[in-house]
Length: 334
Ligand code: CUA
Image (cartoon, rainbow, N blue to C red; front, side, top):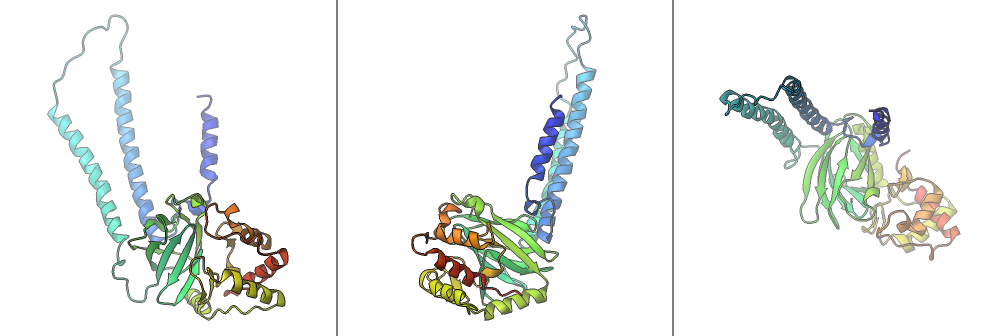
C-alpha cells in the first residue's frame, strides 16, 4: 500500500507521455468515434461484471468465514441449483449479445460504400513501402507521399496495397487500422470531422525502421483541398535562384531515377512535388536544411534498412546545399 501513490504517479506519467495525436481515446472522425463507442460499451460491461463478481466474492468471504475454534462443522452440501445455473448461462449470453450486435453493425458500417464508392467522393490509392507512404488520387491525376491531403467533413475512400512486405495503415484519431498486402487491395474509408493535421503510423512490424514509418493526414476544407490538388497538377520544378538551379541539375542527374517532381521521375522513392511544404523530412526529422543534408548523405543512419542509397561520397557540401535549396523551393502551398 505504501507504493500505491508512487505507482499511480508512474501510471499517470505513462499515459501522458504519448503523443495525444496518436490516441484512440480522442476520436476526431466518424470511424474512430464508432470504434471508441464500442470500446466504451465493452468497458462499461466489464466494469459491471467486475463489480458484481467482486461484491459476491466479498459477501461470501465475510459471511462464511470461520468463526473461532468451535466452528468445525461441515457446511450444508448443495447438489446443483437449476435457477442459478439458468441465470449464469443466460446473463452472459445477454451480455455477449449486447456486445456483439453493435460490433457487427459497426463492422459493416465501416465497410459501407467501399465496394461501390459514392459519386463524387475522393478516392486515394495508398501504397506502403519500406518505410514510407505513397498517396495517389486517380481521379485527380495527383501523386504525393508522406503527407496525405484529404477534404474534411466527408468520407474519403482508400484502396490500400503494399509494394514489398505487410504494413498497416493507421490514423488513430480518425480510424482504422487496415493491413496493406502485396497481392490484394484492402478498402476502407476515413472521415475527418474538422480540418486539421492528424498523425498516422504503420501498425504492422515491417522491418528495422517500422517504428519510424510515420505519415500525416492534412484535412482541409473542400475548396482548399481542391485548390491544393489543382496546384499539385500545375506544379513545375522551376528553380528560382542560381543555387536552386544548380540543385535542379544535381537532382536531374542523381535523384530523378527514384524521385518524381510533378509527373517526371521515378517511382521507387517518395514523390517530392511538394517537398518544400512538408513539416518533416522523411516523415520523422524536423524540416531543417541540416536535417535534409544529413538525410541525403546517410539515410540509413535515420531509418535503418531503408532503400535510399547514401550520397555522402558523391555530393560535396556545396552540392548538398544546392540540392537543399532546390528541394525547399518545391512548394505548392502559399
Ligand atoms: Cu511499415 Cu511497419
